[in-house]
Image 1 (tube, rainbow, N blue to C red):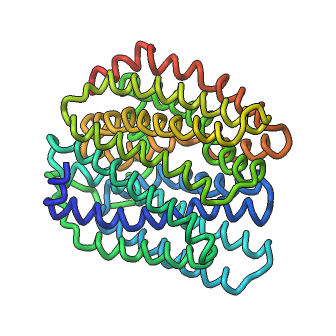
Image 2: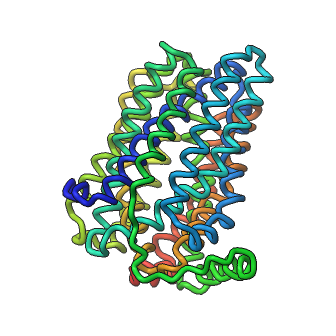
Image 3: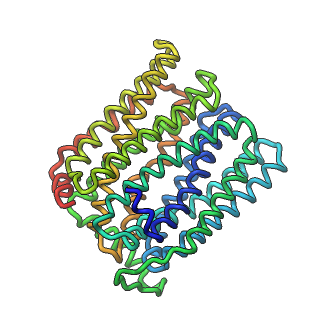
Length: 420
């Protein structure tokens, strides 16, 4: 698998992503913990996360059309430079401000700018991959990115727990800004062949038609829309467990330090790392249909167990030591199963979608799968603030169960998986 790094363009794309993702990993972890600390409000943290995701979702379908028309490499380094400058300016204001309202305003401003640029950056990265990697190595390339993302998350979250305690939130901003800038410099040297894809560079006349064409493509692809709508409901159900409930339990209920939560996040990342290694080593031996179903079943099972453990420890039915001893293996298996699900599915989609439509289709798919997540994060904060964790755990099971059955056994979804 590591032979992929001998390909210059892939190595440059990887290097740029590696640096910026490490910075983003400890930045995102530290921001959530920081907001909980200064506000003591799960709702405030939930709303902050929701704003960034909402902005990205709104911009993403529009960005997809531009990605298909413009140079993807240029999109990558320009958005990295913008993100770096925005975070650096945010750091300057945080150094100068000491009022909670002013600090929150800066954080919201930065997350809006990041959300806009993320909407361009991530689909452009996905759409660029088949242009610099041949089809036979595409599954290994996807697995390699999952593997490296896990390593980056491990390093990033460990750094977050340490740097937050030593340096504070201001210097975490500075370091993250520098990682974006270094990433952009690396990406400037990528040379991506167009593989015969003709691009229409006139932006305005066909913009609306291109966007509608992307939606029609997804609608007409057997089982794809049904699969993504079910994924939407699963993400809606599961997102608050990770983004809201886990930090809430560690910080406000158990009174633990940031490093304790970082250990849980690192365990999850190690599971992703091992999953990426396994599926990358298997390569083309992985049967897409079977892997997706296995990954779905195991992901749902571990998600339900995680919710139960959070309830048990908050209700003092199990002690902290037992909670951690059970939670960490659950997170590991959950992460492994997500990789077992996502890598084959992403590879199948990249192969199935026409090259000149990848940008808009991938952007729309990302939007569909995450469309309700801002609402999910906000509602997660409301539930924890005013109702309680038990209601959240029960809701996760109720909301996710029927979509899970459709994804596992639905006729249209089965036909889609057989085509991959």
